Image: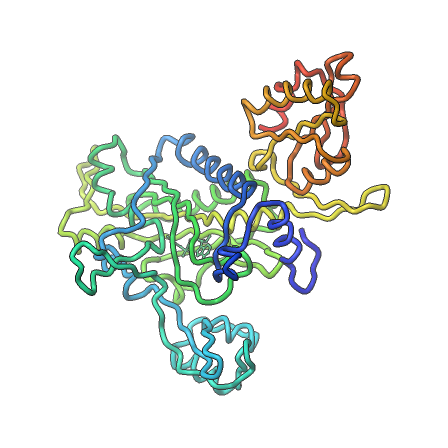
Length: 460
Ligand code: GAP
């Protein structure tokens, strides 16, 4: 974990930019708040996480199928789902500098107390009574608190009429609910079963978000798991355990992941029980993933608003019912942030030098192995290139011949590359290479012939 400093994320943000993981969005135009680009290594890391998630939750289970629904859904979907009426945050504006803040964040950060359960009026009064200052300009002159919907609105140009509003989806889940009938009609699925989807979601988040923790465009990996109501408690517990196993699989320490039960009065409009998996980020313990019991709220509402029955008939008992849903949801950006925080380390070496290293779990590391000729000599380079070509066919690897060998090791430590392979003059004599382990920094001599077998074991 990063050492505490004034901005505990600073070293991680710096490394993410320096090493091509994450760049600020629209940087050459002065930036665009709460947006980021994933650079060449960031995109590899992201892809590895999403591929592993899909393999774990779709390919390796018999009770799951996948879906890739559209970002733009019929506007009535958001009326039925309750997002048009309920998906909003209480905001307040500073009259002096026009900055806008989430009321709960302003109260929590300025008064060090929770704003949970406060009405709009109570939030306005609390901010007024305690003479809360604008964190931007210091004025004590706020508007009344108001609700702002978090959905991004766009317009369809089909009819050219004003008011043809469409919404960028704020969660991927709804695409699954509205295709429920298609899935039971076309696939041989039997309850209990789940539908998994990975895709973009958009939220007009006002408050700055601790790097990629809170962004306006992000990816969700979501599962809607359809069940009979009578089994919800057991299914909920099973998924909670499964979510913990996922955290372990990607390399998050069990000590840094905790459960946080949502109090009844703060549950989302669709949920009867929600437990967050929270992670000890350097800026505080905050939501990583969520698990919700959405009852049959969504399917019932879509049946009501669309006029199509979304009932399921049990093939054995012939019982007809609207299935209930357990929803495990995983944010991709928060996964990446947690992994960077977990993996980041600054270590003092025996010679007194410092090294920065990302101890990524090999499964998710963007580059699995780097191949170096000891020095820039044609005879070594030729051999190194053949080793690299063989490995690159199987894993994402890198070939690097420039600079001192120590510097090349440091660069790959910062990228989290688990293994470095060096081709030296002994290689030309006996066809062996040195294999250096990122974490222990130990080197062993291994035959080229056995390299793929050894790496396969170490990387799996
Ligand atoms: N379908 C349920 C749902 O959307 P949520 O708790 O609002 O629930 C699910 O979001 C997950 O999406 C969160 O646990 C988090 O990982 C991620 N997430 C939510 N808002 C985010 C944001 N503004 N930036 C990055 N990730 C976000």
